[in-house]
Image (cartoon, rainbow, N blue to C red; front, side):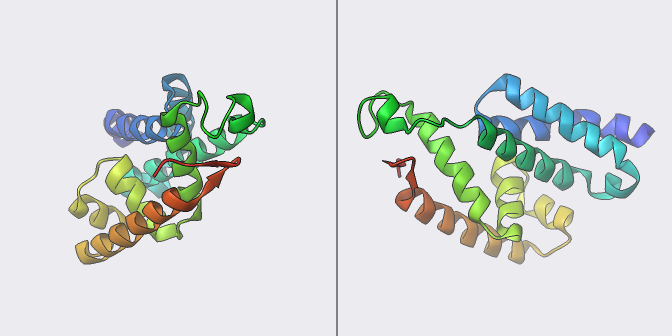
Length: 163
């Protein structure tokens, strides 16, 4: 597992960055990071060759799952006295982003997560997903366009997400 030990710092940074951007909470992001890295370690023989995108995708999926479990059960408008009331705008945006990410097709979601949440370059994403840079650009463009539409039009617990 020497390769895992060498890759650990970079993988931890990617997993934490992705989880924190989705969850907005350092403690939750650290727990997601630990789980993603534990899963990578357990499957290292099969994921070692493409560890960065695998860990980023696992971290994103775990963060989305954690977000689903903790989201408020009381409508935000009722809890905060109005359409957006005292609700934290960043929380509303994150809520909308997670919902919109879940609705993207798999390849678009992978590209958006790796490119914009994990901060990989187009060339790195193409290499990690074993596709061309043109394909990465196409999926990123379509994924971002769809995210913009979703974020502008979706209703979250009766509150229009900021767009």
